Image 1 (cartoon, rainbow, N blue to C red):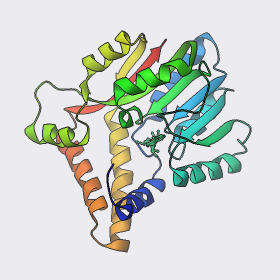
Image 2: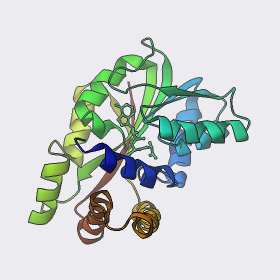
Image 3: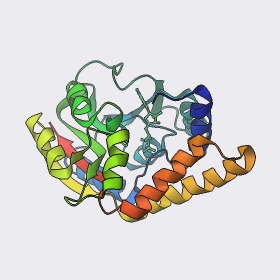
Length: 246
Ligand SMILES: C[S@@+](CC[C@H](N)C(=O)[O-])C[C@H]1O[C@@H](n2cnc3c(N)ncnc32)[C@H](O)[C@@H]1O
C-alpha cells in the first residue's frame, strides 16, 4: 500500500483493536484443524501474516504443535505477545517479526502453513509458489483468498477490485492454479457470510470510535467504502477457503 504515514498509522490504530485483522470463522477453522489432525497431529505450524494472532491462539488449543506466528507489523505482534504471555503460551507460540516474501525458515520446516487473508499481499500464485518449499512432505496449506464468485459482475465491483486487487481470480482459476503448482485440494468452501458480517460490524464500531476522536479521515472513509462494497455486492466475491496438500 502506498499511503502516507498518517494514513497508515490510523489504519493500524483501527485494526489493532479489532478481534481479527481479516475475516475468518472459528467453526471453519476448527473443522479444518480436525481434517489436518485426522491422520497425524502436526508438529510445526506457521501462521503466515498472523496479525494479532486469533488463529494462532485458537490452533494452540486444538493441537500440541509448536506455532510460529509471523507478521511484519510490530504493533500487531506486541498485542499477540501480550496474549501469549497472559495465556501462558510462551512455550507454544513463537512470535516472529518477518516478511512472508522471504520467510526466515529452512525448507521442509512445517506440517501446516495457515494463511488467512494474507496470500493476496504477495498474490495468490506467487505466495503458493514461494511457500511450498517450507512444507514438509505431505504438508498442508490452509489459505483463504478473495475470489470472484459470480460470472455476472457489477461494474462498480469490477472497478473496485481492479484498483484494489487486479490479479483477483475466480474460484475455479484459484483451484486450477493450486493444482498446477502441485497442490492437492483436500477441501474447499466459501467463508460464511456471518463471518464477513461479524468482521464488518467490528470494523464499523472502530470507524465510529476513531471518527469521534479524529473527525473525518480518508483511512476511515476507505474502510467505510469497503464495508459498503461488501454489503452491496458481497454475493459477487468473497473468500474461498482451501485446504491444500503437497
Ligand atoms: C488481512 S490481515 C490478516 C491477519 C490475520 N491472518 C487474520 O486473519 O486476522 C493481513 C496481515 O498480513 C500482514 N502483512 C502484510 N504484509 C506482510 C508481509 N510482507 N509479511 C508478513 N506479514 C505481512 C499484516 O500486517 C496483517 O496482519
